[in-house]
Amino acid sequence: MLSKLINSIESSIPAVAAHCDIPCKIYDPYSAQIAALSVVRMLDLMNELNAKNGNDLTSQNTMTRYIAEKEKQATICKEEIRIIWGDYFKKPQIDSFPVIHELTHNLMMAASAAKQGAERDNGIKLVSLVNDFAEIFWQTKKIDTKKAICPYPPSLEIVYPSL
Amino acid sequence: MFKLYRVEGKSLEPKITETDLLLGIRPVIFGSFSLPKAKKGDIIVFKKPGYPKMVKEVSMVSVDQYVVIGFHDDSIDSRHFGVVYRSEVCTRIVWIIRGALFKRLRQGLLRKTSDQ
Figure 1 (cartoon, rainbow over the protein chains, first blue to last red):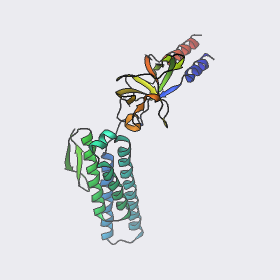
Figure 2: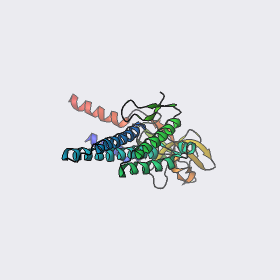
Figure 3: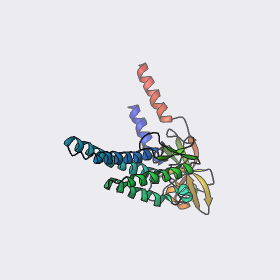
Figure 4: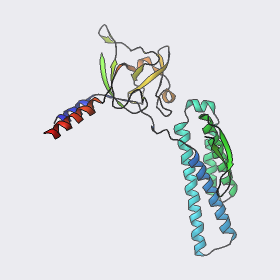
């Protein structure tokens, strides 16, 4: 009874919003980089299997799995970049790096091209654009970056923060 | 005239938390409401079209316009909706009531209940 009274008094007080979109503040382009690398890895595996000329059911099954994974990873890459671009980049970051809009759009198109085709170059372009994005992201936080070859296939150069 | 608010959201933490209550003031001159005036560092409650009634800190003041901020990168503030015009300001906060009043009242009740 009294508890109900307290609840009703509390809810009768108007609320004012002090909202953040998400209060966690956790943004990192690494997930997008991993996804872009995975796209290249799947393209490599697809090309390897294709070179074997295998047309049996097992090969078809494996190829289908590679393609499905490539599709999935390209989508993850797009989603991760869109969230950072849409939620993290605000006026101060955009003013400092106005190229971010064009870069993000190019990245979306590169990811779609990687989905549509089987050419390795599409994947390489995606990794390169995601690296450009990561470099800008860390610069907005005034954190230096370094480039290093990732220690696993497809052994491509990746931008890492120097923490 | 005084108005009491409760806070939803964390963008002003640690200065203002969701358990705080806020007391706002709006001056009344000759029987009609006047618009509150705020300076840098004041907490104001305002209403922008398309947004709920919001509370933020004033970070800059120009003629009848306020730039308001939350304390986190992803706060929804002037970086989203631009300046707040003086005509959009509802009240200026004069007292932050700490101590999770309602939470303590409920806990007090629970204790009493279990004692019996």
